[in-house]
Image (cartoon, rainbow over all chains, first blue to last red; front, side):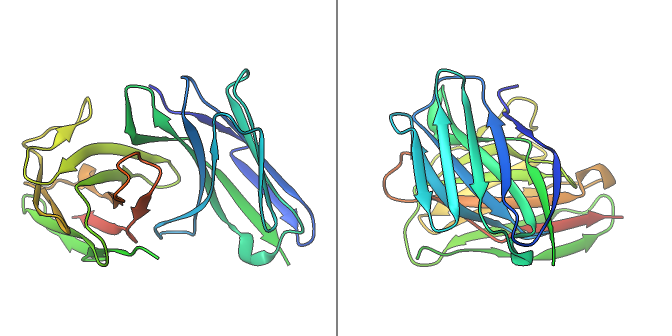
Length: 112
Length: 117
């Protein structure tokens, strides 16, 4: 399977704390994306980082990419209860860049 | 921004019946749409790639006769789960590829929850 791995599988923190999620993938990529999914809902695109980029910011989100280690991290700073959701990384498939291969996901719980 | 809708949002059916799920791109045309399946507390697994005007491409292990896909127009793809069984109960999500065709601009629908009794 080409599916990426994410860790931790689950993360519980208090409001105001930072949350870090990691994603590892198996093949070379053109880009990596992070998505958020509220329970039982569709996906919301958060951020895309290209293979030639090392770090990207968007509001309270910070994404890093290390292509030598085939890994990425998503940092959410100053978390809020509303950040409670599952977070998935997704890479373009090496054999077909139109397709996305999703990681296993991290379930984040932020307590008020 | 680009919007993708799915209908129905949830469906309960008896074992042996067929269920059709629609995926529509509301404000853009999508040559390519994707269908995913997600079991509880698991990730999204790509089932098939739907191309307008041609046959869908199925991922390994996905039965094309079980999951019929029709992409009849640039704004509509349908997934029909034929002779559904309880093990087909899942959350089905579609996405539509924006005009770039690079996979960078996939817009996801809200999902359809299927429960087969």
